Image 1: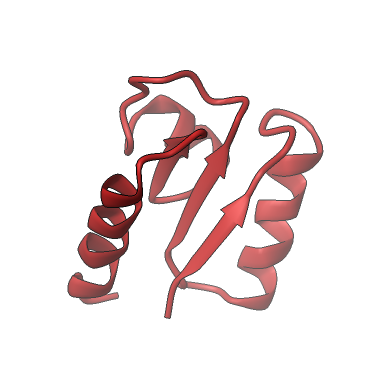
Image 2: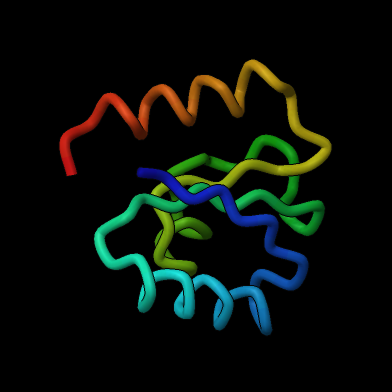
Length: 78
């Protein structure tokens, strides 16, 4: 299982929304996407860690980047 969350306000309501998802689906990896993330952001870096997600992807996103992230998440044992 995997959740891809479109996070509008990552530092405010978006972070709470991620926590709500985690409460309902514990141990399920989350990829957060947002137009608020800057391009070139490290996918598993500080922003991902502060949100409590496995990866972040900036929008507009490149389809191949999203597919690579999904493949990476579903290939890992939880």
